Every structure is written in structure tokens, then in C-alpha cells.
Length: 601
Ligand SMILES: *[C@@H]1O[C@H](CO)[C@@H](O)[C@H](O)[C@H]1NC(C)=O
Image (cartoon, rainbow, N blue to C red; front, side, top):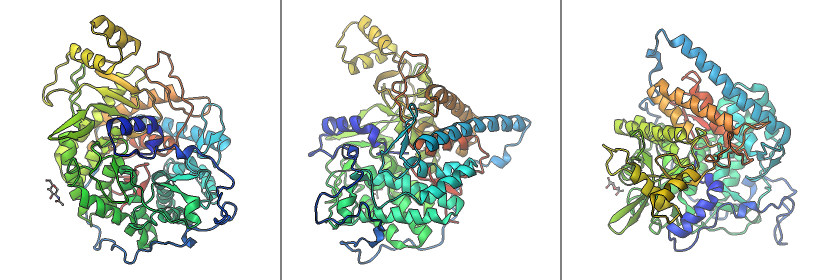
């Protein structure tokens, strides 16, 4: 899942990162800021612009000004037989199997009921809007007014065999009008992973033609955002101006994930339609990524902020696998799978990037039980040294899945071991907090050594003090602060205490289960699910939590339910309790919004 999307929620943190820590030369357009402008009727103030708000048109009929003269060729050759990702479950038979199956199916039914209930509430209170208000009913448009929850949920409904719901939703997809938006600025990344991604995966599964037709419509809309002199896309895009023919240039500040994670969707659109222009558009971006990979301030990784206009990746010194970068890395092994291994550059970019990430972002946190776990933090090169910021984002929990899939596809056993430790860190963090749910962002205490990490309470307290604003220098005050802020042992600070129904922890637990066949992963998933269900359930659906460190018996609710709750979180919970042949990772590859694309054979 990833990144930027994750933008809306990272708005505040992102702004702080960018302005305070990253010392960018000039500030990035604050994400989401433009997205709050709602102009549902006539977005055109200029007389020179046509009246497209009320007139339907197809984006493919809007002229492209910066025509591509020759397409980058789709890689030739037949898809290769790639190394298996999934554990060989056929060998796991034994006396326990029948009881295990019953338990698994009982749990799966509970997940399905949760999804069915959330969908029913969306259908009743927020039909065709982007999101349900899970407390009061009603809905809101947060992603363009194109029924984000409906489109994002399609493949989940299909996989959970909620076929009546699915067919009703497919009928409604026709009504979604991509020639107009409720928002002035379209977030190209979000629209790509949620709308284009959701439609393509639902089409793969059901072969309903309207889904492909709609995927082409929204794909052609997004394609127009690539209409710049260097063919790099405009990430925060004024669709009305574009439709009116206003010339566009690529942005000088863009989050690397927004530029680097359009590849799977556009490649799959070419696979589904045979139209090579979509693949060409993202292959151009990957050319830049490959060329710049060793030219950054931390060679091997790409920084959080890059310049899409000049294609300069050298200015920013913030490096992370987490928010704002995440899916750019996630898509490297996944593109290898989606292309059937016929383009070697994705393996090469993955290996180089992960070598750097392992060296500079991974740390072992100090925990009271001395767990042998790993977390991927933030790296900032400074002269000859690289400074590590030992933060743990909920979002970075996807890295377990990243290293597991890369490790299996490219036969790197060390990456699979790292993947398990990264996943176990998130399982640990869930358990460390009183509700059994980890927060959006926290800070940990890194161990000096990866091999040996004895718990030292005074070191932890020192880290707490250092990150607090208490300014106290006597132990009494620190203890008071710890109990006041209800900090679990090992957590130095909770920077953002929300839980917004995110999927990344269960995503990696699910992938590790499919990769290793270990039942302990199903047990961990069930603990996560019961905690989340208990603390997020409302009268009609599920809500984000305002603060996972609150003293209340049941967590205080934030009142929103992003489309990824049904699209991703519940899908992964369902699939970990499914027969492992359902959406096998050897037949499908998930995009960063958990939309499974069929891999070529
Ligand atoms: C980038 O650096 C890595 C690690 O030093 C090296 O293996 C690789 O060949 C380099 N790639 C290019 C394109 O120079």
C-alpha cells in the first residue's frame, strides 16, 4: 500500500519533514492542500476554456500537444518461468489439518461479515461518493468524486464471493464520469492506484467489459497528465486546464513515490488493451530512475523529493523506504513479476536499492523481550556519514512483503530472513500498545548491535526524555511523563497516535504466511483482526482511531473510513484465512492498493 496516498494522512507530518528536516531548496506543493477545494459545478473561470463540466467527452479526444514520436518498445520475448513465491502447501498434511481448516474458515467468515457490513453501509449512506462517514452515515468526496470506495472494493467483493454486491457495483461504474471532477486538483498517483488499479484487477477477475472500458477512460485521463515537454507526468494535476488545452510542464518538486509507482497500472493497461502508449509513458520514467540511481546523495536509493522537470535527483538528502517513497521500491520486484521477468532492469534496480536500504535504513530496536526484529527507518546522508532516524511508521510495515517477494523472485534467502524480521517488528508493535494496534508514527530506540541487544531501561528512558519536551533531568519526571503519555516500553515517542484502518501490517503478515506456510502468521493476523474489529467497529461500519494510546476502554474514533479498508485491509485479512491457492502469489501480483493483476504465463 502505499505512499502518498498516504499522503492525505501524511499531510502534517510530511509538511514537517519537508520543511524542517529535509531542507529542500524550495518547498514542495503541500499535498492535499489543493485537494480540499471543492468546485463541483463550473471549474472554468476563464472564458477561453470550453464548457466541459456539463458536457461529456472522452479524454482520448483531447489533443496531445507533446506527441511521442517513437514508443519505447514493450520488452520482447516470452514470459519466463520465475522462481515460486509461495510455500508448497501441498506437502502440509497431517492430523491437525481438518481442525485447522474449520478454524480458518470460521475466521474467514468473520472477516467477510465485516466487509459485507461496511459495504452495506457505504451502499446505503454514501453510494457513488468516495468515502463513507462510518459514524454518522453520509459520505464525502476526497478523491475526485469518482466513487473511490466503490471502484476500490470491486475485486474484494468478487474474491469474497459477494457476487450480488459485485454486479450491482459493476452496473454503477457506468455512471462514474471521468470528464469532470469534484476537485480542482487530481492526485494522479491516487487515481492510478485506486481507480485504474481497481478497475483493471476487477476486470482480470470477472472479465466484465465495462470495467476495461472504464479503465481505458481513466487511463486516458491520466495519460493526459503526461503531456509535458519531457513526458514526465504532472503529479497534482489541474484537469480542467488540461482539458482546455493549457500547456503543462512536469513539476520541479514531486514525491518520488508519485513518480515511481505508476508502472504496474500502465503496464497492465497495455497488457489488457495491446495499446503500447501506456507502457511507453511509464518506461520513460523508469529510464530516468535507472539513470539516476547511482547519482543521488545516497547512491542506490532515490530521495523523497525529486525534480521531474529537470530530471535532477541530486538535491534532496532524505531517504526512506517509507511514506513518500514506498511504492517506488515496492514496484521493482512486482514489475519483474508483472512482465514475466523479460526486463532485467527491475531486478537490477531492486538489488542495488535494497543493498543500500539494508545498509543505511535498517535497525534493530531495543525491546523488553529482546526480540530479534528489524525496522526500516529514515536515512539522511551528511558529508561522509549517514544519520539514521529510528522511526517506525505503520506504513513502512509493507517492507516485510517487499523483501519477501524480492527474496523469493530473485533467490536471495537473506532477503526472506530480513522480511520475517521486518514483519515481526510490526507484530511486536501491535502487541506493545494497549489496544493491540500500533500507531501511524512512533520512534524506537536502535540497538548498537544487530546480534545482541539487551534491554536497558535507563537507555530507553533517556531516549524518551530526549524526544520529549519535558526538559526534565530527574528520573521522576521521566517516569511521570511515560505514565502520562502511556508509552509502552521500547517506544521512545508516539509522533502520530492514529490508526487509520491501514493495511501494511496485515499485508506483510499475509505475504509471509504465503511464503513460509507458518501458522504463527495466521495466529498473528487473527490477533490483529480481533483488536482492530473491537476498537474500530461503529454502529454501521468501521472507523479510524483517533489515538491508540488513549486511556479509554474502547478506542476513540476519528470518524473516517478510507477506501483501502475494504480494498486492502479486509482483503488481506480474508486471504490469509483462504485456501492458499486463492489469488496465489505465483499467479497474481498485487499493486500497492492490493489490486491483484494476473501474471503472464
Ligand atoms: C550502481 O552501483 C552499484 C553498486 O555499487 C553497481 O553494482 C552498479 O553497477 C551501478 N550501476 C550503474 C548503472 O552504474
